[in-house]
Length: 572
Image (cartoon, rainbow, N blue to C red; front, top):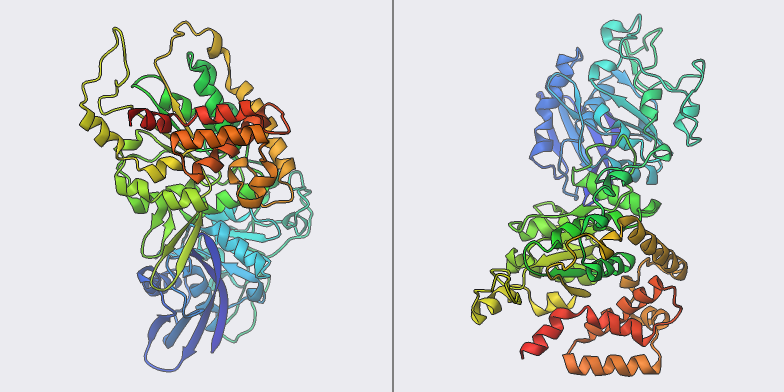
């Protein structure tokens, strides 16, 4: 006897469809799972056996072979439990699932038969939709996440007993019934206020008696009800750091002085340019960078799905009832993080912090305190906007297009450059050189803006302190709209993504600006990468002013943000 169910697993951050094939043959009672399973999948034999028996079903006393196809793809996790259990029950003649060919089954089984949620449901359901499936059965804890993918009829169960039990075949068990109208499972969006007399959409499972005949008077079971369907993404958006109002509570208006730093952060947000703030302790570096997400525009639809998939694959999508993530992620790992934690890794690699910060901000506070080896792995993601991790059997690619925001002190004690009655620096030139050497030249070359943050002179909160997050966000949104229109026919969204022919076309310099930039490059000894980044930064400054062309003033301001490069030249 042969049966097949559809399930899925994660391959990087993408879902991959897996066929769960069941074969029952005469022989000594034994269950084997083949197809490159990991330990969690091999242990599914005992979970499924106990769950089937404890729910009143019969586990076949035959030779049971479970094949996970394709057999050459490494698989991990416990999401196959439900597919294996229902595959065994249908193949052994205890259940009948006419719609098995169009249904995805995901879920982990407890020994008592209850279903536990698993990670990565969103990319798995998306893969099922691409494969032509139209239904999905998931644990109750994953129902809202699965419902984020439109065009799929989502069924949720909390226990195998929610299937019609053999003892209830004559009367039907109504205790666990949850129904949904056929209209509600489509993408019309009219979920609230549906009449109670809509036709029911039954879950396509029927209990078979010992003769192989279907039971009588069975009731439809296992579907999302109206309460669940309110989680449809058409009606809700979710903020990773809370609502927009909550984010704006930490306002730039709370920061005293530092007008030039606010200007720099506005430019960085408008073009998604990397930035580092350097200054003594207590000058507001961390405070200002933590307010950076409040002035960034929300994710668009494609970006929102992309970011939500990454968090789902990483197991960090905790609350899906409010829909897809809409606010740009803000990640601030501790300086003790490992290289694998930063870029991703593992026997089957998972996304790291650079991928979790995709389309958002990666904040590295006290940059020189990070290990030199850890910082060096950032060079390739900053250049290519992807992370590729190779293993013996496969190579995994994770997106990593983020705004890198860093802070650092000017020296080990933090007081280099203080004058007058301020605390003086106690570091020797050798210690200062050793402290700064933790940040390599190639990494610093990839940071567009290097801004000094001195002690504020305006302690009364006047002047620049009045510049609020709302005002800065207004300027950022205006510049972002200009870029969206300019690059509408290109696969880019921000000035920081320009390169090659697109850079020469959309950020062309006039003769005067070209001569100015050439002289600056010669005097500071900057690289060609810095040359391109200065031009892209100047393009963003021009967009903030609504200028169609880059002027010498825009270029001069962009060069002013290469503070660390100028300091190195001055020291030499």
